[in-house]
View (tube, rainbow, N blue to C red):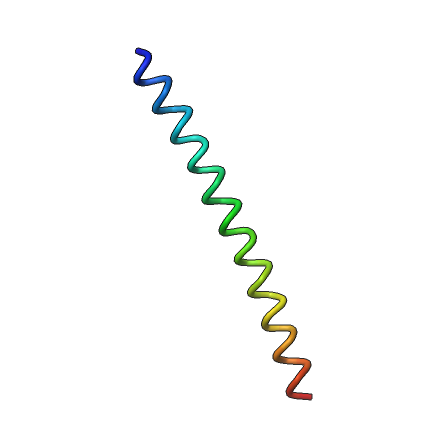
Length: 41
């Protein structure tokens, strides 16, 4: 039972961490695409 609870906590933490990384990468991609589209004008 303790292993199950520990696994839930670790899995939840890793899930939130990965979602934060994906959100940061998405925002950075938007900034890069805006930067390059402004340079071409």
